[in-house]
Amino acid sequence: MLGPILITMLAVTPAGLESIARDARGRVGLAAEIVETGERVELRGAERFPMQSVYKFPIAMAVLRLVDEGRLRLDAGVRIEKRDFVSPQQHSPLRDLHPAGGFDLRLDEILRYAVSESDGSASDVLLRLAGGAGAVRAYLRELGVTGVQVMDTEKAIGGADGVQYRNWATPREAVRLLKALEQGRGLSPSSRGLLLQWMTQTPTGGNRLKGRLPAGTVVAHKTGSSRTVGGVTAATNDIGLVTLPDGRHLAIAVFVSDSAAPGDVRESVIARLARAVWDGLAGPAR
Image 1: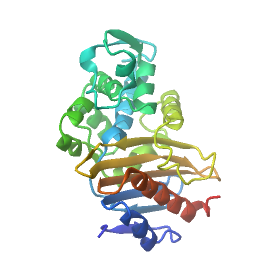
Image 2: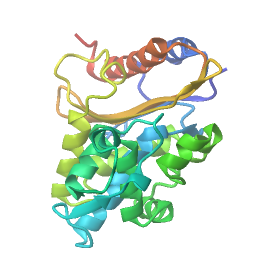
Image 3: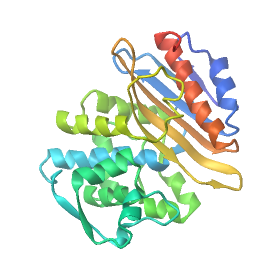
Image 4: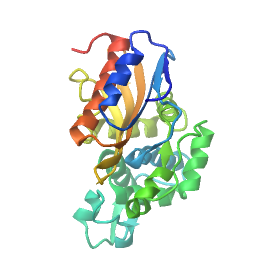
């Protein structure tokens, strides 16, 4: 059983969504909404799913809010020490480039590494600059987002498999946060533009939300992935804003949790669900 499904777009059928999600051999959650009209669809929309690196998106928003307030500067150098690095098993291009630590990097570059490259060390530096997880949660509450819980550093998440479940989101609230970004709430136009640029230019997750959409579709998104332990993968996620052919925007979040399926199947489930939602709104993708 995949739980309750809410459909307000008649072209998207519950049977179709269930059939796709079943292939993940785990728990699948989806929420999608046309920002401009409110048309929406949900599958397990109110359930909690581990975010993994999806949580770098709200952390980046919280830091950019401090930039907007003049408390941080994008062109300011930030010292990064070896103690800031996540474990060797975790993804961090910054650590790989500067294994000894002890270097300065502009804040805008740290943000780009965290959002576009999904760098765990960069994310932990940002979390510190934001004032910690509690400050990020307070910022989210200001936006009316209560179902996205940032609790721990990337280093802590990598240290014990169970920690990732403390850093969760519901698909419904992930979409609420995406809508806030699209509607220009919580960030200045310049900060919003930078974040959307980094989310659009990311090389990660090409086979997830974007995987079956028409070539050239603009998708500003943030992925999240866990390691596989005992044949089960806790998190394979992608959330983002998709620009439809008529200029409207689709906010969509897909979380695949505790899945026994191979990686290509998990990513295919995300891509097929995104395609099904696209077809229900914009006509068949070509």
